[in-house]
Image (cartoon, rainbow, N blue to C red):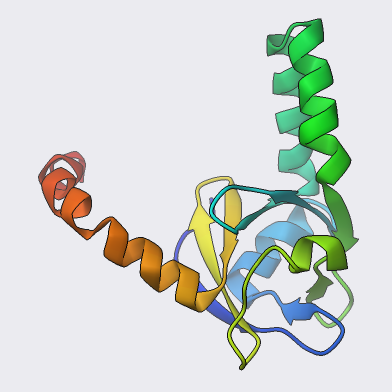
Length: 146
């Protein structure tokens, strides 16, 4: 399971170092990751193993028309990358352009159970601000589950 918020510096080639607790999970599931375009100028990042499970769920659940939509709108825009020996991963350039990073070239990784979300820091802060009222309303229910 992925959890937490992690700040990662992106180098001039578009690579970032995966924080060690996250990297261990990725490496245990193969050294390849899959990046997907998401809403709100973010990306999703899956381990190779988890991505295979996503594909199996889509095959088992979607009808033929839905499968075509999935292939055209999700798979066509997805990008794979390998984790190098130093623990860095390259975000494919066409996907990297979708995440607005600040001048310091830092991104935010958020653990989301079985995948990571990748945000630009300013966008992440704006998202938190926009959803502050809703978070306060729902936090009592959330805390009861804990």
